[in-house]
Length: 126
Image 1 (cartoon, rainbow, N blue to C red):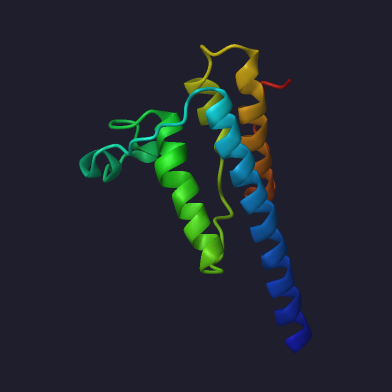
Image 2: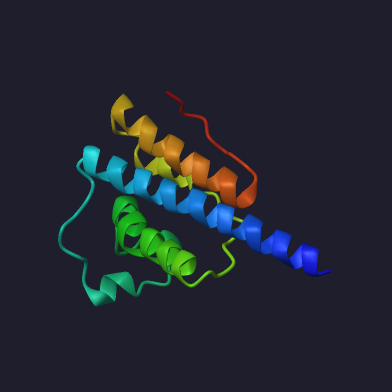
């Protein structure tokens, strides 16, 4: 039983490390595609209860100010991560007007989906 607990902790630590790297990649891709903002949206905009805060934020803003922040907090506090996540379909819809340079960002989100949920629902590839 103790071996199982240690194995679980080791696996969780590895997933946390992989997610931390993917979040760094995501941050970089947001910057490369000029989707990174220096100023945070208002507290009211961040408090939306709609999925992806679609009523108050762009998807890129949600990634930067909600998703990345929450995932980093979960990693820092060694918390269990979500296991039912599907960001790629939303990204493909939100970024459909962008040129091919956005595909690396979409791939990064696909990597995160696959890491956390074991599934990759991606149609736009590089």
